[in-house]
Image 1 (cartoon, rainbow, N blue to C red):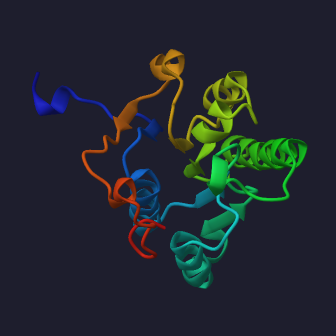
Image 2 (cartoon, helix red, strand yellow):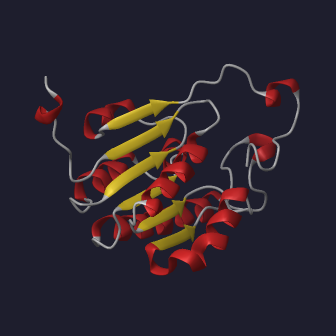
Length: 189
């Protein structure tokens, strides 16, 4: 097939999933690429409630981009993750936070105000039962035709694979956490 026979799509759905590091990092890179292209971007965070480096970065560049960059941090922390779980947050509070965050993501994906909506850690919210698979299906199928969508987090549901355009699985080969070292700020979060 000759190069001129290829077409571009008005929008795409991307997935960054897997057990390896780099899903959020890839989505932040995508955010930078989209803003550099003059796009309006919404970055919706489903799990991380504590301040992590990407949140600081987004807040600091926000004044440069004004209404072209929307940031919403709606998570309550890790859910049902042993010692890493958010303490003193009930399952109901986690579920309600996930639902509110989903409503925000749905609005951003359908209102036509953004060329890219990034739903960071949404796959975790579905895997943990805070949202259901129909929520992601609705987000994908009802988004504005001109809005690209990026879904990150572990355990993307394979039955949704036919609905996405690009899916990348981050595979862990080695991580220092397995040797009882904590995550490094600026590298891991």
